[in-house]
Image (cartoon, rainbow, N blue to C red; front, side, top):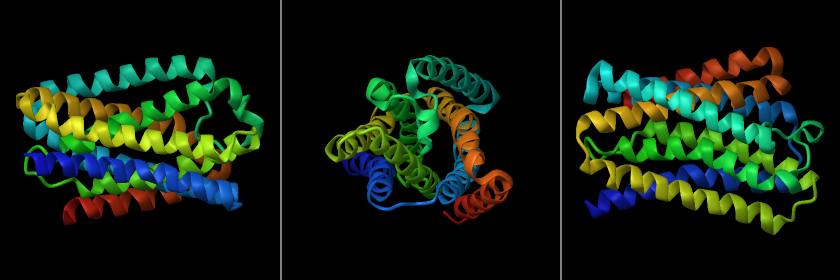
Length: 249
């Protein structure tokens, strides 16, 4: 039990650590926006596949139609409402590297951080939940989270740097969020392993709904801003790779 719980937290932290890796790369290396957008589109495809083939399939296996549909709709609605509030407080373009659209990061900093947590917590909880049935982590889910977090760290750190945020503040923020995502994954396993399958199914479906809404509302628009007609191509490749990983795991 403790070993599996520790692994859940570790894998969640690994997924969140990609935010810090992306932030460091974005701070020190000048990366073209088209490349960042391509990585984000690829990550969106990976996340969509993970949500479909790992999260929703597992949720349906545990709880059938009722729990899966209820949880999924709840995830969509909750994410939309919270994201709407955060967008109005300054986190609308939290995944972009374009200085012209980010506004004032000094004023919007708390909203940017809250938005990153809103994006990261559902996927981290999902990592922990995937370990409940057999103690093995959903590889496709971890890979999806890791890949999708790199462009978020990249683009956000570029925007923060351009607005005058210090290196210490930028890296400290993303490291803190990585810690929180690790704890969220740990909680996803340790807390929900005590609950009946229907509750876990609804929670997993909730995470899937939140993820798909996040992809549509934030990742795809920001990817399209820079990659345009190549967005679908990169997203399709990401989807295919995650599909293969989910079947090999």
